[in-house]
Length: 408
Image (cartoon, rainbow, N blue to C red; front, side, top):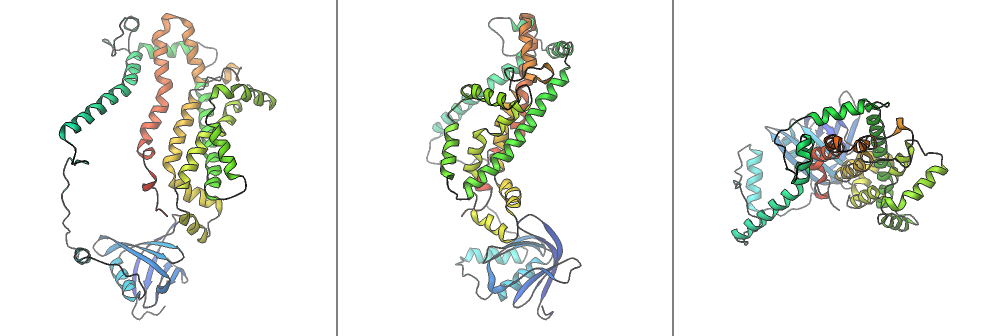
C-alpha cells in the first residue's frame, strides 16, 4: 500500500474468536490493512468494495473503537489511538457504502461527537412508571402482592437458619418460634463432635460428595452441551426422533428409573462405586433440553463466520457457542449440583468410606430427640451449597438471549 494519502494508527485488532493482536492499521484510498507488531505482511487486508458495514464508538480524544464487517460476514474490531482519522479516511473513500437516511438530530449528534463536545443526555427519573395508564392504587396493590409472595418464599430459609441457632428447649417449644430468643452455635459444635466420633472421618464424607458433585456436573455440562449443539445446529436423520425421546424422558421422575438404573449399574459392575452416581448424572435429560432450546436462538451467521475464519467444530463449540449460552449452562449447573449434593446413594453405595455427606448427616436422626439441634444444623449445611451457587450466579441465569448475541 502506498504511503501517499494514507492514514496510520497504532492499536489492537480483535478477531471473532477473541484473540487480540497489537500492531498498526493503515487506511489508503482503495483499502485498508492491519500489520502485526514486527510483521511486514498484513494480518488483515480488505478493499473498500468488500465492506458491508462500519461502526465507530468514540473512546475520548481521538481514540475510538472501529468495527469493520465485510460482505462475507468477516468481522474486525480495532481499538485505535487515531480512530477518528482512520474512520473518516475509510468513510470518505468508501464509495458504495449503504445510504442511510439521517435526521437533523443525527447529523448534529455526529458533529458534536467528532468535535468532542458534550452531548446533553435527558435526565432519567429515579422512579419510572412502566404503565402510566395504571392508577397509583393499582401499583400499590401489585407491590403489596409482591411483598407477600417474597415473604412467603424467604420464610422457609429464615426458619431453617433460626432452627439451626436454637437451643434444645426452644426447638421443642410449641408453637415453635421463628427466630431464637437466645441464639447459640452449640448445635454446630455438637454436630462436628458427633461426626468426629465416627470411625470414618467427617472429611471423608465431604470429599466423597465433593468429588461426585464436581465430576458429575462437569461431565453433564460437556456431554449435554455437545449433544445440544449437534441437535440445534445440524440436520441429520433421526434428529427430531432423538429430541422427542429426550422430551419424553423429562416426564419420568428419579423414583421411576431407580430400579432400571440399579440393574444397569449392577450389570456393569459399578455398584458400590462413585460411578454409580456419576454416570447417570451425565445422561440427565434436563440439561440437554435446556441447552438445546438456548442454542436454537444463537445466530447461525455467528457460527458460519467463525468457520470462515478457520475455527474447527470443537473450537466453534468451546469458544463461540458455550460463552453465548452462559445463562443456560449456569442454570444447568445449579440443577446438577442440587441433585448430586443432596444424593443419599444408600441403595447403590454400601461401603462406609464411600458414602456421601447427606447419608452421614442423616444418621444423626437415629440419635433421637437429643440430636434435634444437630439435625437442624445438618439441614442448613446441606442446603447452603446450592443456595450459595445460585446467589453468586443469579445475575447471569436471569439473562435472556437478547443479551447474549446478535439475532438473525
